[in-house]
Image 1 (cartoon, rainbow, N blue to C red):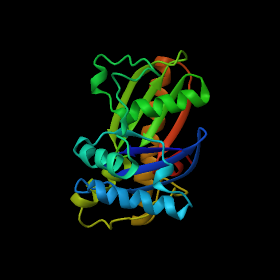
Image 2 (image 1 turned 60 degrees about the vertical axis):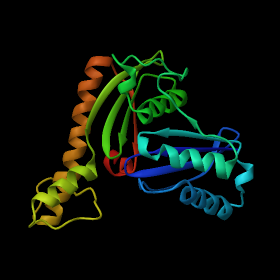
Image 3 (image 1 turned 120 degrees about the vertical axis):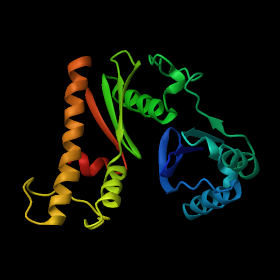
Image 4 (image 1 turned 135 degrees about the vertical axis):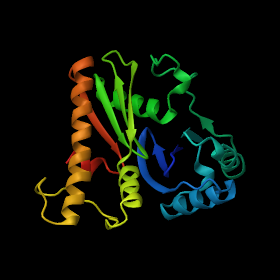
Length: 229
């Protein structure tokens, strides 16, 4: 039984794996002030609710882009699971060649996502990850990480709009409107944000495929379902 952590700027995603299949997963808000003990309590609670115990965890594997949280994660592993966590390292992993000019610059989450997509499809792939930033990660037919692009995330863009345009209402929920030409403010915001962001993704995928050829496009992250629809 393996516990995995994807530590992002907004959320920490946990997954419990049994025999190479994810049994269940959950997420919590990333807080830089979280201690190893708090993380231990979170893990213990979710495991207990599913009928498992901390002692059953064989390894903790972590992909993190939030370096300040490393001490807390190390304490989670050593104190609560009885073993140090295994941090995925772009420079030492052997699952995928990274063709970036400087591989150290690539976020671990981007490479892990590319590895996961390629292991599933075994084909030329573009991974669009809707997180704090939206990233486009490209994998060759031979399973090489080619590089990609980074743009502001959907919620980051929306929050910036609401913060700067004070007369606009702050939306907490978004939906795909029926029309791009809206007749009221709420639909106008959803048209501009949702359809506009979909246009960004479609445009980037078109440009990327013109450079690398047709590819399987995989959407992941919190808003993947909304934008993919």
